[in-house]
Length: 379
Image 1 (cartoon, rainbow, N blue to C red):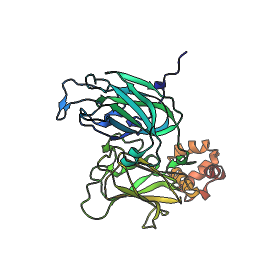
Image 2: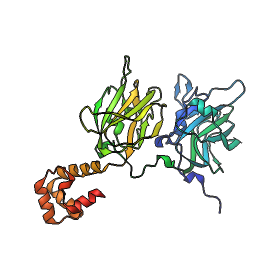
Image 3: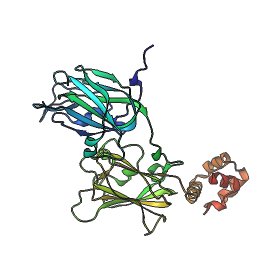
């Protein structure tokens, strides 16, 4: 029996899962971003543009001197690579005769300089590939990588690059008991926004990942002093421990920097304290920042400098005891009577206890609730 087909493993590089082509030596004929599109490559023989034949892939110019071309992909999910597919579909007279694949493990959100200076390890040595073919190349390397580099010799076109393997999570980013405290679907809401000329501010806290730049929050170009911001009320008071500032799809209009502040008060001027100091951002990148000194907050303020677009903003962490209790009280006070009776019965209250509680609504605090329900809230 042969070895398992590595192509059955997840594609760690897919654009739809958060991967990005962050650098290419050249993309004169067809843009690098096509390499990791999730759909199969298409082809229209009649399609020509200002740069020549339109290809659904990455294509470089004809190289007249020494050297070769390459593209660097930031994996959507870092992990162990078991194999790659270099698909030259529809590239027949212009495919590269040979390719190689390397990988690197990098901390943080590296810029182009850091990528070029990284220590790259060979996953696939220089190998001949066929035209118009999904060339499957197995990998035997036990290390976890964050980026892969596809080199083509000397130039040409590649339709898709698939990077199959196993995800290995970074335990530093796994927050115990965490939930997205700012999420729209759990009760987070935008309280204030400096500018929403191109994209609604609530897009930043919408569920799921953005699929295009149009699904994020984008402000107008700032021509004067100051900076743009969002102020967000959390679903309930919590302790943000991991912040995500995602600039996916914002390639030339991402903010240069961002900062995040918190306030303990849900309303009013309050006193803001720093959760993330002013920090550089990279384009088209889901940045994740561990909060160095977590503390409870009911509101957050995301400042972007000086302007630019954000695909998503997340604030992961546990609810505080007070926040959890307030969430339960609000939920209980807003339930229709019939649903409330059914829910309270499932939570262990007798019919009499449920009826008495419904008579007293709205309750102000969790201390007013009968013991079976209070015990559930305490966890």
